[in-house]
Length: 507
Image (cartoon, rainbow, N blue to C red):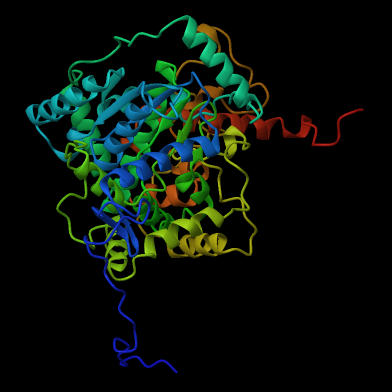
């Protein structure tokens, strides 16, 4: 039997640490320059070849990006995203062995307003990154996070996905691409923003209030990640890109997997950590760096002078217990020091996980979360952990008679009078709802029903919303989409008795 205070150090065999005097495991000739794992020593040339091959093999194996497609590279300035940019630039060079055949663009989202940076500091960071982007020759877009406040509600609505192309058409697409490129040489695009776009001070203040409305750092980071993803998808749509490349590496995904399980996002693990994520329909998120560890990326950037720019985030200079994300990262990295296979084991396990929930790509718009746009995981049986948690929460929040309630009373459109003009054009004619016994015009349903937002969110986003002091701080495009879904749900209930169930239609 294992004992709590028993010492097992003497019985464990210490692994021999490879020295730099050993030969490369691949060419067997040159001296080792880098040690990736115990027993994996590479010289400088073989390590570069190994690193480049892994990136192109990941893209070639999945065959999601077709020749000629416009791909948006999300670069934050960190080591992983800058290394991804370097690999794309290397793959598009004329002397590349297996040349990449898509049209890349770069986007950088400036989040300096959230962390309290001054305008001068933000401009200095943008100038450093834009100098790096101009050297690649790719078109780039610099977007301030404050622009998320002006997004349309279609960002969180279901967009029609393009028809899926079978793998057999990939070779045909390559042939057509080669013929088109041989006849006409492409010229670099000039569409780029050379400076930080002007952001009103009121927008920055409102964004700070939005992030600050979350009581915990865990909720603030989760909310910031959601807003960032919405802005990425909107920019890709407006600029004509069909794919977005993210710089998530293996270490980051291992931390993200454990964090997602902790935050109740077990049903969304396939979308959050997989190679491709098609939750938005027409825009697909791709993670080509998911096979690289943070150690490999750091070695490659140092050996081959891949520059990166430090940008502070919400958890910069915080303690290990400041948030769930920070605590999970500290746990995984410290465990990785003593057990080098920790990250790879967690990462490989994530590829085998599946969910019984409906796929986000096949779910109806009303069955998707309002924030993360994943399929709702709240439609479960009564005898489930979610229902037990919900019942316990409702019982704990039960108010005794005479106690002062703190919740905002929800306005019932059935009994309230219209607050404005009728929903009919011009307001000259009534919509007819009062004549049917509705008790008022349907414009009364346009009042914000903030207390009913939880029914439109998945379990994890409900926890984020619960940590916010007021949902009125959410951007207008989210509140508008919530009201639209509530009106459609109410309308469906009114005409439910006239709708045919599946299988009841005539032959």
